[in-house]
Each structure stands twice: as structure tokens, then as C-alpha cells.
Length: 485
Image (spheres, rainbow, N blue to C red):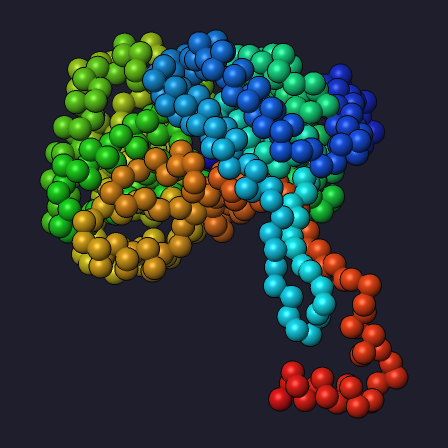
């Protein structure tokens, strides 16, 4: 994900700002509160989840308005569908399954160690830090928070400076819902990102760009802090030779247009059979025009987050054109877009590897279309590049689907659709390689924020005494022969 670079600077010798002093105070308060209550019971955890859910539902209109202001225009429905709805449903799912997740799991004890019992208990990690990006500022706060609370942790959340309205609203919502030694929100100021990343968290979650993710990991390494990195990369959408083009184009159009491509799992480029390129372009244009007959004055069509990102995307288009790309601007109503930060979707054909649009994650409404001849060629193209956060394949032939799934690596995959796997309550979500590490959502989120402690319980009778020194006795020879022959 494209996120403003967190400044990992040396803070030694500099006077602490009021914000950093507050960060330190709350962090210490949460550490002390956790030491007093290191294993909250199932009912306490459920109560915390319910309070969070009720706060989101009660404040949804305020949240929608704040996100809209931060973007200058954010589709109301996109905030409901991508932030509030999956956030609330994720909480409900955790509530329903929490008792089962918390239950210690019994493990087998081999004959060599009998008599004994073995089990795994799931303990909270402690105090969890969450660094949130700007593109889905509510959902990417609530998702990790849900998993961390379900696992019994204390949580501090660092909001993005690019969404100050939502940051203020969410901070107030959390302050009204939880004591600050349980959950606290920190809003942005210079130096806060580096200070936050450098705290000795028991677990740290970062969602943002691969570039910044490397810096976060370096800062966390000083404290040996375990990290979950949700990054991004260039997620491909592969169209098969046989799938109906209208199906593929419409679903890719939805995935690319949602939040105008400012989504870590948005289709970053399309791999299309060479003989079907024209068919894809026509079907894609038709789908976009049906969804957004007008864009500039359409409140359902989201803006680019800020002028800097808007200029970056326009520079990508100019660079591609200069280097020979064929650019198709989809602007059904022929609007000018001069007075807003809105940007119509652009298809980019005849792209080359030296174009900036092919070097980094796009994170906006630009979609390169790359021809291929065989499915093996398409997969080779994907596999020669860093592993993406998501992979989309469009085909109704099971054999081809199985081949693609077993011959590619990605954080997640969707067959015949885009984006929606992120909101699936019972699927883990996470990257691989340059698209991230670790995963959360569902039970995997509970496990990420828990320490799975292996426990072996021996009775009064000590069978282990049989192998104590002095070695070389008959019992040793018998055991070696029994187990090693």
C-alpha cells in the first residue's frame, strides 16, 4: 500500500514532544494493566468486542462523514461496504467462535514420555501496536484490534496523518468505549511514527508500502518485536482463453474502480490472451461506463486521497505515454476533472518494463493490460516477479484453476472475482515475500496475537528416572533397541 513514509530517525538527544510523552505514558499504563490481568476470561473478551461493535454501529454516520472529508469525496457505500460492514461482521464472527479458539488443545504424548499429559494453551501476547494506513483507515484499525482483543491483549493504534478527520473521530470513539490502558488511539505528528515503531511491543502490525515495511521491521528488530506486515505489490488479474469476457471484465472493473484503485489488493495489471485484448478493452469500457456514467460530480466516485498522490498518478500516465504506451482514458461523460482530485480510470496498453507504472504498485485507477500466448507464459510472467498480495484468475475450467493455484504463490487468491476474499470472515489474510509476512482475520488472527504455549504435565510417578545416569545400563540398551532399530 502507498503510505506516507514513516520517519525512522534518531531521537536521542531531542526533547520529547507532548505526543511522544503521551505515547510513552499510555504504553507504560498498558504494560502495567496487562501484568495485573494477564489472562482475561472469555466473557471479558466478548464484552470488549461487543462494546467495539456497538460503538461502530452507533457512530457509523460520523465515521462516513469523516472519511468523506479526508478524501474530499469518498463514496458513502464504499465506506459502508469496505470499512464498517466487514469490521462489524468480523467482530461478530470472533464473538461466536472465541470460546472454541481459547480452549486449550490436547496433544499426543508418545509412549517414551508416558505417563504424562500434553496440551497447548493460548495466552495473550501483551501490548500490541497497530500502524494504520490512509486508504481504509477504519477497517485497517478495527481488523487488527478485533483479533488482538479476542486474544486478550491491550492495544495502541497509530492513525495516518493523511486521514486526520477520521483519526480524530476514531480516537474519540475509542476514548468513550474503552479505558486507555486497554485501547488507545494515537494521531499523527512529526516523529510519532518512528517513536511508535520503536517501542518494545509484544507484537506490532503495520499496513502500508513495502518500502516503509522494511523500515518498520528494522525499527522493530532492535526490540526483537514480532511483526505482521501487510504490504501490497502488483497483484495480477489473469484472464483465461475461454472465460466469457463480459464476466471477467466486469469483475475486474469493480475491483479496480473500488476506492478508485486505492486498495492493496486491487488488480494492478491484467494478463490477457493476445487475441482477446480488443475484446477486453471493449467489455471493460462498457462495465466502467455502466457503473459510473458520470465521475467528476458523482458522489459515488471516490477521489484520490490528496494532491501529492493525484500528481503521482498523473506522472505515471505521462511517463507511460512518453515511453510509448497506448493510453485509453475512460471518461463516459467527457468531464474535465479540473476542479477536483478525481481521476478517471486509464487502460495502458503496449506497456514496457522501463515504465514507472510497471516498476511499483500503482495504487490508483491505472490498469496496464499485458498480452500473453499460453497460460504457462502468463504464470511465468507472474512468477518472475515478487510474490503479490493477491492473485485473480478468471476461468470456469477446474483443471486450469488447479494448475494456476498450485503453480503460483501469493498472499491470497480469488477465482472469478476480485477483492472480496479480504472480507471473508473464515479466511486468513496476509502477504508472502515482498507483499508481507504473517496473517490475521479469523482464527489465524487470534493465533497471531496469542502465544501458543506447549505444556507437559507429569504425575508423581517419574518414568524419566529410568534414563538418568549412569548411562550404559541395561535399561538404556533396551530403550535404544526398542525405539532406534
